[in-house]
Image (cartoon, rainbow, N blue to C red; front, side, top):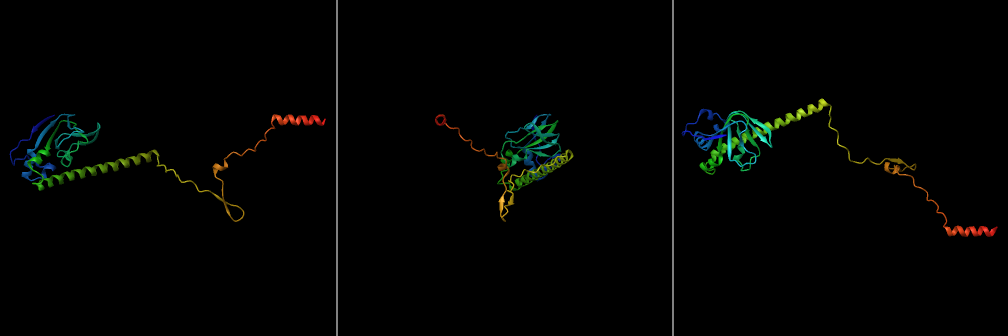
Length: 229
């Protein structure tokens, strides 16, 4: 990956950059300030432009080529339309990057260092400039949320169609409420509860077995019988 400072004369902005949505939000004077804090990045396939977990204060504009957004090594999205922006959340927070961006083929990007931009144009002195910047970031974020919502809806539809083709239906949740006890008439106009299933399955109680007389008692009885003879 090679990086070059973007050098241009004041007021001389290439027409190819004026058509970029991110840049067309600014006036000519504002655009000069943006480009003065920018650099060209030339990438070869598999060059890492943004590293997941790294701190990076730059916003990137795709000028040519294709990049993949990856999380934990898995590709989440592909950016290939010239003028698309990535890494835009660096404007609103200083958190570490939540995903990596990797060149999928030979790619050229414009990197805008928003921290350098803030040094050149402090926020409290140039509210109109940052209002235009934040408005654009909000549009980009909203567009990506809508695209994500549409994709989720498509996945849910595909899942329902797959289940229908396989004859899979959602099974009802088990009813944890115990069944009410049945009641029967007791013959006197009243009601009595039926025995529960667990009670009806209890084994019948056994009658107590009479204990055999002790050995001493048996000897006494034997003597009495002998005396009667």
